[in-house]
Length: 246
Ligand SMILES: [Zn+2]
Image 1 (tube, protein in one colour):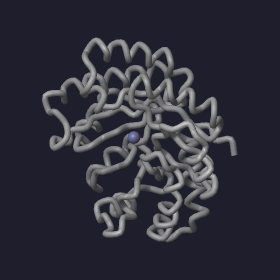
Image 2: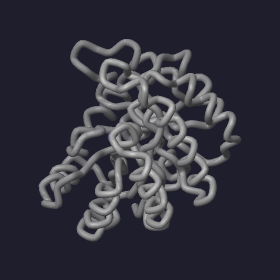
Image 3: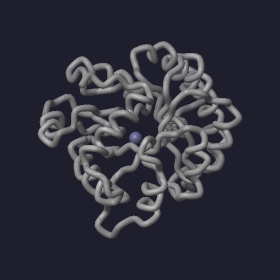
Image 4: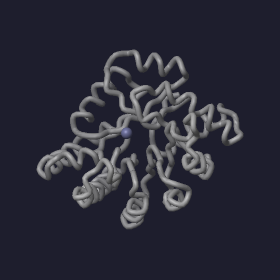
């Protein structure tokens, strides 16, 4: 059984699910970004059922875009809708200064902290989006005395930045970077340094079928069978708190 640990399905037609199933993908964990997206996830779930796992959260890019009033409203809506979702995310910090507005970083941090408090109250596992802010995020997580499971989706840090996450119990999700044609050495090293009982794989796209080759490449890299790797990842997904029907 293959699982895509992080995807964004934005279309209601059957094509993506047929392609995913044909390549062995049974479960897709969605990443949530903003209120309209949460509502759309609920609609998708009505259509696609057990294959989809909902996550609602205010993504740092949206935190940057929305006004303070809109954010307050969104956080109220988030708490109201969360019982329907299995997890809270994606939330976190994106400090990639080439693309993000650094004057918004304090706002990102404040909204991230607010959403961690919501996770604690609702006891939902968290999906974290972290770019160029690994030290800050691990510091915030330590300060919040978190006991909830969480995953770092599309892990982009190095081996040194990985250690504090692992000490905090994080599950680490890798996208196609480690398997790219030119080989992404940093990602490969991070993948090898992640214990197999913390490993996840994701597309971060609308094509969960594309996760299949990642299991093949990773099993070669780790020297274990693809079947065993699939079992380990499924077990990890269950440990985070997602219900897998089969
Ligand atoms: Zn995402």
